Length: 219
Image (tube, rainbow, N blue to C red):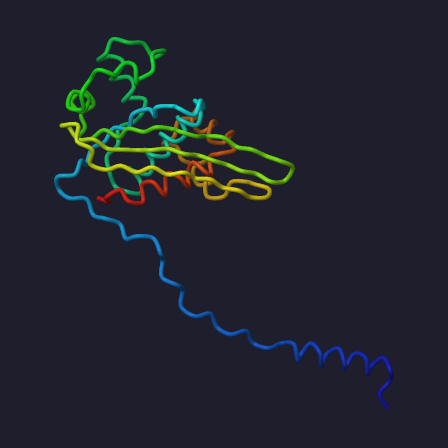
């Protein structure tokens, strides 16, 4: 005779076995909606200098972070030779006879694209405007906004590429994920790395740069 205890055990085992229904296999992954990368023509600039962003958002750290993210994107992901920002700034200050305390935009305001390209030894100059860089938090709700515009000019001052993006994220909680790969990048100066670590908007800035340069020709 089966005891009451054994009967209960058998009933539980039967329930578990009945619940072990194999899950359906996943179908093939949906094709990516991202546009295919455009290949740069032979005439497209291969050597680029990225100027400091014109800062309309009032965030000095945001402008620095976005500039270095753009440099890294162009160099590592898109295959361009990009001048180091500190070397770019030094050359421009030396050429314009201004000190580091003078913003680059003031120092080069009267220079044309050809002269800038010659000074920097590049074929193209990337300009940028930081238009918004702020984060609002209400209890557990967080809104992060980074807005910027970038454009590339050649030696004749002609605009070869331009794009503007607004990374406006609303979420509960927060925390960086994909920005973590930057925290071990030895190519980023320690002072800039510290700004990236400290900023609550680094993730939104990275998303904006990825989106903005999604239409930039790849070498």
